[in-house]
Length: 355
Image (tube, rainbow, N blue to C red; front, top):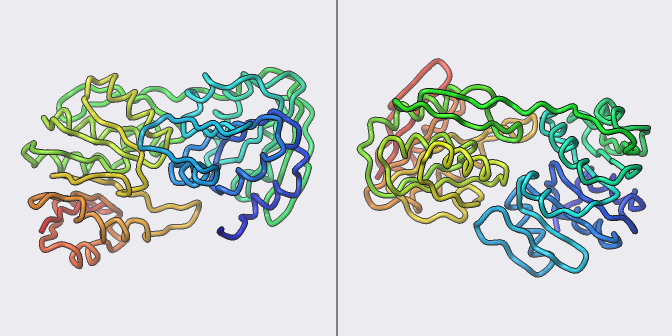
């Protein structure tokens, strides 16, 4: 078992907020050990967005997840959701305690707080736990609209607040749909604060889609790390007939499903940690993330580059867009016979690689 995270340690020393209560835990549930905190709950529902964390938690109770989303596993008094919050809400009973693990994305925390209190009993409890640099220290500003709020604990640069749910409130505004011209088609994309790029198509993804238009549609295509699903939808509009979109985030997978259906795109959606659960494809396209919290890391992308050729067919081709300064070209050349830059701006580079 990995070393305990500061957030887990903060919650572990406040077990009275769990014991004997009907509890929902949601937000940035990134430490599987959080499952151990609900042992003495009356009932507990954990809404987990991250597929890897959800898989680990399922294994802790002797069960497993497949690659579909949403999924729910029930074990004794515990429900484990790998799901977006809207879908999970449909299966939740009323409960008396909400434990919200704060995201550095304030809009995402606001969304969860507003939606999940719809089934919280009046005079129930709302707890927020988060790192001080990720909104934990100032979470009382989110909670004061609900009722009496106080700081419960502070440890290892994390803060725990408690509020009594006395007042209904509405402090979250749904983001507007994004309307854009995509490879000659008018498309509408629903947005979600949990999913990368709000209010516009980010420049890197736009450049990747532009580069992909040089490809004659063929075989099976994979939109790796699909986010809102826009690359997969673009591939469909280009004429690809066998498209899979995958992501580690339940919110991203649900958003991709909705956007594909809205725009009449035929896409298979699967949960996967990068390439973990995917087959072989003739085309793989990716705009990989490189931020973990406030730190920049290229390690997951370098690992993906080392393994992606094992998921390409004999004549398969790999397209990747990235910030030019991250230096992925050398790793691509170590792993592919042919690497070329097909698009370039002052910020982004689109690489094409094949054997």
